[in-house]
Image (cartoon, rainbow, N blue to C red; front, top):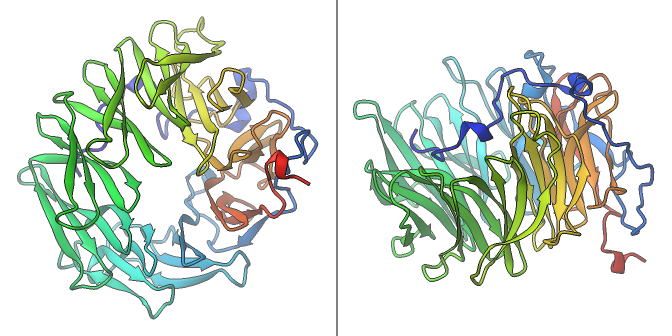
Length: 511
């Protein structure tokens, strides 16, 4: 299937499926769980979503046969198409469905059903991507396998675009991105006889004739799974086999598919931490030597520049951009302390902002690393979760932080988040003063939480599964609600939402 992000130190990985600590085991880990503040309106006058305003939208899936709540999929892949929220439903029995919702039970309906295909498993319905006039996605059927589909939001207007791999085999499609009214994507074809993958860039207008190959990158390169949308273009990374990595840009046309910059870091260099932030995208390049480079791009050749380099004695992670600075963390391999740095976007030396505490440095393996990062569109704050590792698969600690780029404005909001190695707490910023995440508390398991960026304004949103954990996932704002899926008393993960009607205005706007 080709290059999948390259070198990642095992030291920084929390494994999946290794049986790490679950909520009922967290008390034994010795982590004090902070009490939930009672007020729904904080001292700053900022409102938070309420328990009463957080409700199940519709029961879509039957009881799960897996019997493991954290492994259920639930509705997901949320995408706004012409003002209506669309999403994918993948059933355990192999059925698939494209759905839409207006936020009510009656207004949540299936647009197109896809029966289970023959064989051991049916490919997922996935990668919902909207242009102004069409909703694209990948879906399976018995005749053509998993291929590109398009919908106008109606059952009659939902159809397969093209059988890109003729027959029932299906295609591997990646990087689905809207470039204006055009969809751009990659088709990856693995040749088992040569153990090589061919990467082809395609575009589609939603018709068979208008779905054409733009460029064949061949089998002599790898295309990373990491990408970014910059304006009406797709940014992607191409690594020459035994050669350097390059950043490319495409708008879906031949003339608009260009290499922006060939990085000079040499072979065995891989991009990581691709963070779009306003008009810029930040990313890092990791070298085999351990050196990491921070880069920025505005989608042009001249605007693609290396900002700083960090040595092999510490691990660097990109957090995001605020104002005139990029923000990164570095963690020393020897001391196991994490430092937040700011790097001038106009050029200049990195400057330390604050050192984050680590109470476990004397207890052996206790390496902290960034797990999730979120920034609201146009936001002036960055929310991020920090995981402190251990000698076992499960982490020692997990923490939610917020920063405005200053030492005084870098605050620990909540600890712990999930301590399981099988479920990582999501972090989703709706605005500068509202972030959704998940955490356990007392006898309650892992449930949805909200914070307005202050400790006093951080609390559990709702105890959805009173007998265990609801494992909320895929928070997505649409209009005046935030949607997500959560495991509840139906014994499966269903569609839920939380109202934002009177939520989180800036203090100067609160009257």
